[in-house]
Length: 102
Image 1 (cartoon, rainbow, N blue to C red):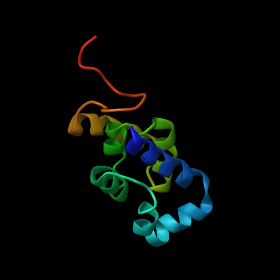
Image 2: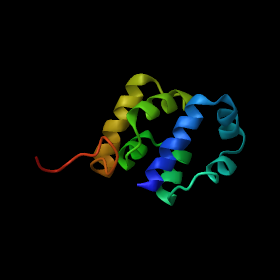
Image 3: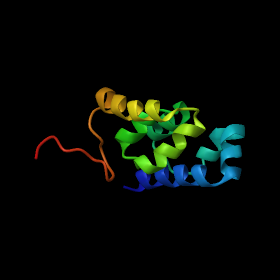
């Protein structure tokens, strides 16, 4: 899924590059324009909605580094992922995709 790749690429760059982190703080909109994201993905990033990003398929390893950039402690990060599943349903894509049957 190309779009999921771009979400994860954005998170990877944000987590590892202080210049990208500064751009995120200074002009998030311009930074996000550089990544091909769906409206739903972009809204989740802009809102800092860890749970929605998780359900959309973002890798938990990337999200666990994004959470502190949002000021989110570890326990809140874990709960945000759980709440995302409760609110938005099963993980839709990526390595954490859930199935409804065995």
